[in-house]
Image (cartoon, rainbow, N blue to C red; front, side):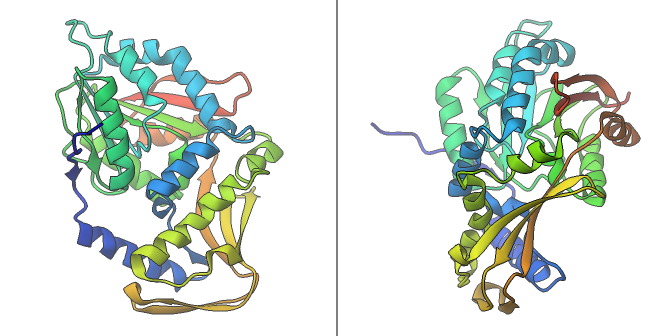
Length: 330
């Protein structure tokens, strides 16, 4: 069986992507404490690992969000009248299929959803998702965009009205300053009356939140260590990946989960692609991700402050996850 090659709209040229990784590695591993941005988890293998995480018993956010989308997709479609759906950090686009189905039948002019544009930083993960979606939805235009959603988003593709979706609680990976900049960019990219659909984890039981990021089977640990595998492959580094222990803790002051990699022994790591050598001490930790959890009123206020007042809010019965639908202020 032959497959048609998938062309992508690559807005991050290969050398720019490599330059960004070099810059992030140099800044993060020479800082105190050491850190690496979570966007570099997501090569094809990292995306597969994250998909596996979403199926774990401990990891409630994805299935809770999926259930909310299943229950309210028709409402979302009716409220937005979407002709073009743009999904930021789309990954496999798995849960988005319910939105695509609903939006295909909820246009006043009867035309339905015309265009789906998944945007992701990983070309390999995006090609697979776009290929599957084009096969499943032959009447829908599907264009994959290789880009970093933390940068400038405009211009957005497709005919209006448009809805930008940012699902999975990924908003929690952005620290407050970066989150404000991101939300400002989303607002600037939309026309008045267009919509922003946001999935966000809520502050919940501390034990349940921590277990969601430290599963018993070790899938999250493998996902966390994958960032070192990416640095090894892309920049020629010599991290001993298996010598780093996955750690997940709840930071009660900032109300976010912190994922870290803890070194089990002293090491000098050489990263020729970043012209860097770094000493890592035993028990020293590299911060790889924060996952902030929110209170609905607080996040609603942040959205309103950038011109995206919340039109509708849905939460699960346990109040552990929420979907916010905002409309760009007229």
